Length: 154
Length: 154
DNA sequence: ATAATATCCGATTAAAATAATCGGAATTTA
DNA sequence: TAAATTCCGATTATTTTAATCGGATATTAT
Image (cartoon, rainbow over all chains, first blue to last red; front, top):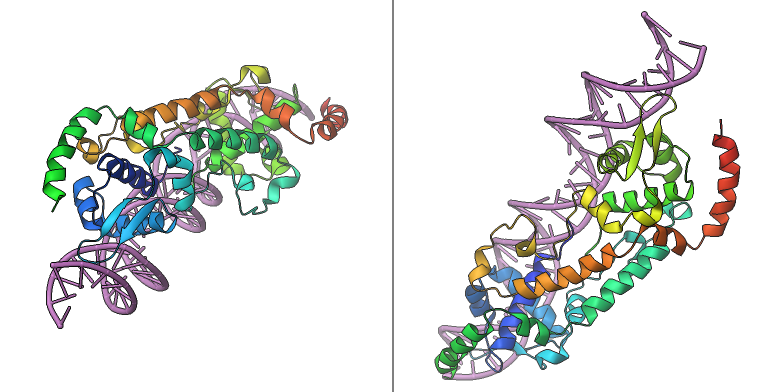
């Protein structure tokens, strides 16, 4: 089974959420509760995203997180990078160039590099905005935004 | 880190190898030694590939494995399928439709489905032949084939 | 026939990666 | 200064993946 890590999954869901509630600041606790994601885990992920300028973080009572840029400026590949989740379809094509003992016989490196590049380009071409626009329930959520803006606007 | 499993890696390497030494039968033991892959593990992988008509297997003293089809007829996606390694970028898009408790809030399913479909198409479009042709050392190996044909032709 | 060489199969163990938790420090605002 | 928050390192738990074990069954050469 090949799949994205939970960290990526949580990050994508959270960023999509923040992208929909643009301009509103959510604490890690709120996001954890609203999205049903383990708090301790999510808070670390959020810190990583803040460090990479995908999120803006603010300390204190009225602190929290919000998007640092427009959703269309955030590429999915940047999220992977921020979370230290490089895509490497096989060991020998990984970034850290770890040497495979089988490299003298195994010839899949070059083709795998090309495949990986294609997948990387694919992921790199998608922005958070597209992710948001593809959501089926977009309209329903937008209605909720209205209510929440009231709720959160002090 | 997102990567293919060892099983996939071993399978790709082995199939590429068999594709280069076309027409020659190799035992699981030989492949294990030649390619430096754990025998017990590889033999199971080979059996799975044989079951899915990617390899032909023969019992007995002169038995072994060889490709069941031309390399250009074998799509990488078929290998994934044969080895029970479905691609599912996130849990909720997996084939077995396992229900995610967060599905009422989390909206990434639809966009992830589309991303997954794109990656699947990409992998599906590549054949074993292309994998072989991309190998840097192809010429060197082809020279070896000559020698091995002598070695293995009775 | 029989010994040698194979594939095949289920179950178990080992290792690695991932996910989650714990305990606390530092920062900001009311 | 107290409450709310981000931030940080280390540890534990869980899950997945990889490897091994023990043996059954099939084929071929002698």
